[in-house]
Length: 170
Ligand code: FEO
Image 1: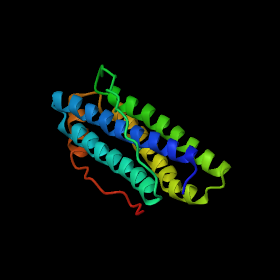
Image 2: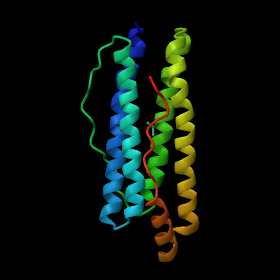
Image 3: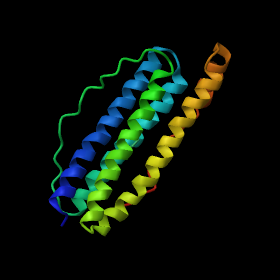
């Protein structure tokens, strides 16, 4: 059994992860519209990752005998202005997700809920990687995305990204 505070926070995190999946799908769609199919692929995989994160949180509640409460997923509200914009929006979004996971961790710590802390450890590490990946992509866009040839090469490279299911097993 989990403390109600933890259950509520994780239910809310499920919604945030599904929203992340939805938000990244919107970015993938933007790049598809722009004929940048490699960037679209990168974000489509990001979408799958976020869906997998949501399911991990959902399964954690269920395995602890808690009820999952699904809420409405917000409409992605950002109108992308240029090819770099989704990248910076993704970075800003990951910072918010990190903050949200840290907030759950802080409550688990306060409650001496070591089981939840251990579960969240994977997400803490994953967030560090996600932030680093998007930050690197922003920097590489700045380096190579400014001219047509560089953008083409970067797009080709991002087309090679494949989905790896999360290493966390609950
Ligand atoms: Fe599920 Fe990108 O954090």
